[in-house]
Length: 262
Image (cartoon, rainbow, N blue to C red; front, top):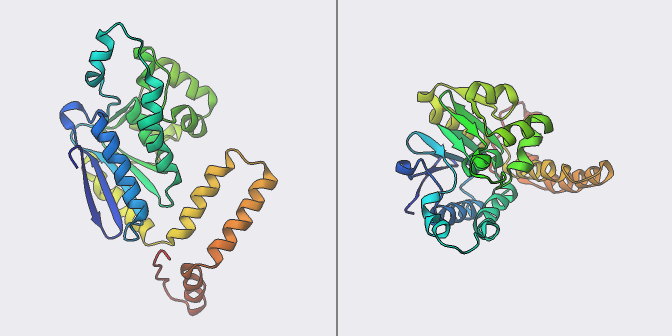
C-alpha cells in the first residue's frame, strides 16, 4: 500500500489515510487501495471492527484536484459521473455492506469526499480539532459519495440543506451537538479512545452487530411490515450463532460471555 497504512490489533483493523502533504486528498491509488483494504477486512475473520483515520493535520480533504488539472485545461467536457461510478461509489457501497462496524476517528478537517467518507462510517469520534465541511458548492458541484443520503439522516433535512448549500465549516463541538459525531475527545486522546471503543465492539457478538447494521440500512427503504419480516429473518440467523448460545449460557451461569464473532 502506497497511500494508506494498515495495522491489526486485538481484532481491530486501523486504516490510516497516508497522504499528509496533500491533506489526505483522494487520488486514484488511494481510492483503489482503500476499497481493497475494506474488502480484505470483510473476508478476514480476525478483523471484527475497523477504525479509519488520517495522518497529519487532516482526516481527508476530498478529491485531489491537482490530479484532474489536465482535464480542466482541455476543451473536452468534464465527466465526473464516471469517476463516481468507477471509484467512489463502490467504496461507499462496500463500507455500508460490510458486516463489521466501522468507526471514523476524525483527527482534522473532513471536507468534500473526506466528509462523505466519515459520514459513511457507522460511528464517528472526533478530535476537538476536527471539522466537517460539505465543500462541494465552493467548486460548483453537488455533494456526492453518499453525503446527500447520510447527512439528512444524521442532522435532518433543513440543516443538511443549509450545510450543503453554504459549504459552512462545522467544528467538532457543533458536529457533536448536531449528531454528526458520537463523541469528541482531546486531540492527543483520539486514537487511544477510538481503538478502545473499537476493541470493545470487537469483543462483542460480531454477527449480531453485522445483522443489526444491515437492518438499520434496510430501514431507510422498508415499510413497517417489510422491516418486521427482515427482523424476523435476521433474528433467525442470529439465533443460530455460537455467540447467541454463549450469551445465553453465560447469562444463566452468571458469568461474563466470551464472544468469538461466530
